[in-house]
Image (cartoon, rainbow, N blue to C red):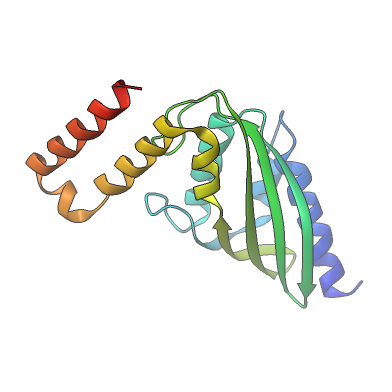
Length: 174
């Protein structure tokens, strides 16, 4: 079997595991313990544990999450794929309150493999489109949370309170 065929098989196994609502642990088993991730929000570490925590939040927020693998290009020990996630937001996700809305999020992931395990990945997710689908209140929450992550804001309690007050005022008038 050629290396790119093996890579394609592993990616198909990965997406099957992501869609297994009973036990998604096999998805993480396909990643090496030395995994390095790029593109996750900065509050998640770039290792395998950080990726597990991020996906746990995705699964909690979108319990009916369904991932589709749209395109795969594989060459040697590397692959690029386009994917989409559909699901209904039932719980908070990255500070965005639950909306009970069905959304579709598109993205791309680039993978590097070693010995049939994923050792490095770069994720690009269309989060702007997701926020538009969730609605104005969720968009405001996402903007507020992004502003509150700036180091200057985190260290200035007065500024933090003003920002929270401004956003809370606008979110309660919807």
